[in-house]
Length: 144
Image (cartoon, rainbow, N blue to C red; front, side, top):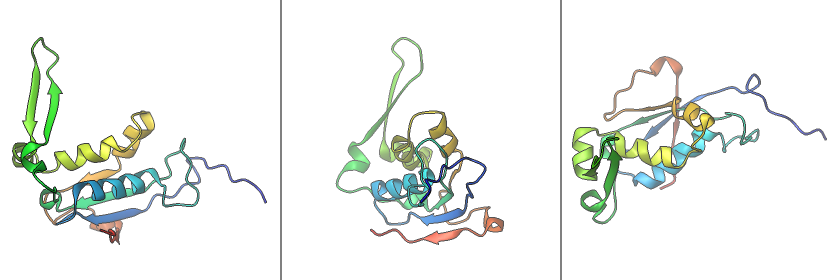
């Protein structure tokens, strides 16, 4: 039996649709990261982008358990002295409804050039509408 070496020319990328409404953010993020990396395929290789394009809808309706909506804080720095900025999850979801889920998914991908390439295949929408109907995405049922 021969070992198959995967290269980018032999990989086919499909389109997957994930509905995040009323599902825990971490569970959605792990499944989406798995689809983006291609770990659900038999040809998975950590050095080649074998993953699929993923569309996430209803990102504003994602669920957080406990008091995380009020207590979880996100940090960024402006680059200037004393430029620390903190925002809690509730305020961030009002300002950018897709940002917490996007950050959770990015945290589960490799922080390399390959990980940034995988993130470009992610499309997140706050509502139920998306503009990728022409790609005929397959609906993925999350086991939550």
